[in-house]
Length: 361
Image (cartoon, rainbow, N blue to C red; front, side, top):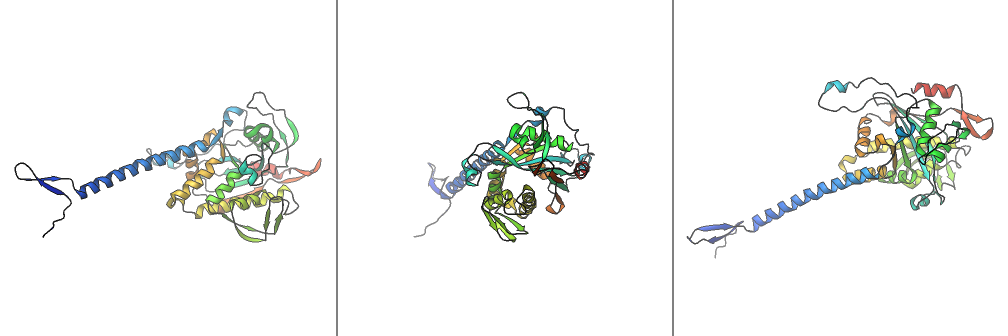
């Protein structure tokens, strides 16, 4: 008996001819087609959901409307050479930027409590950096401002209405405590006479998630760290840190130097460069799951001004900085001296402090 196997079955018609009907192969191809179509639909829906989630993760504050025109002038930059090169393509921005970056040490919430944030309410801006990106966006200077610096805190608008009173010899980080991001920006602009083009705030539990999403971060410490308060105990040398350990390193101060905020700033600056190196060495474009985890960690812990409160705007900023490597990032601390009124506080050291701010305008 001879059995012929084809992709289709045959049956006779009324005229004795062969009429072809769908068989196994056609049904299989049809099933594959439906599956592929369904996969494309689900993929598109998944991508749309991911974009929606990441976009809605970001919290923002309308600083420009709150502060109005009583601010330093915007930086004047020359037009981008790429602007005239192509009339059809929108060029990436290349002008100089000044961004106030705050690390918010939240004292509430289960995640922050687990990471050592305590059980009290509110948040503190324990880390403050003015990031100046040069025109062309291939070099940057990061200036750390010690939280214990005594400043004149200007009158700031409140979201509830009214304003805060001017405060003399106030601790720098009190601006965030009394008036949130708006007052933090106004205080920095008053101190530096430099307009902050953008504001970025990352909470510390989100920082830990970001480090974990990147697979950890490698940092070299110059001395042993033994700090029971931050739960960090490291020998001098190179360490690959988890998110929890990296956060402890950013917080620690009692186990290094004189126990002041000044020693902690040096460690935080090391972390900034280490994170830039880790991001550069991680090929996230070939790892969609890893890319999503990093993006979710960043956007989920971020508060921005309204100029950066969408995924598209953040991606545009990131693209414009792709030529910026850690080797081209200079980290410095605001020059300070012990405050005459309080040995536990510092004040800007002149004329060095003014010279630094002038160099960034």
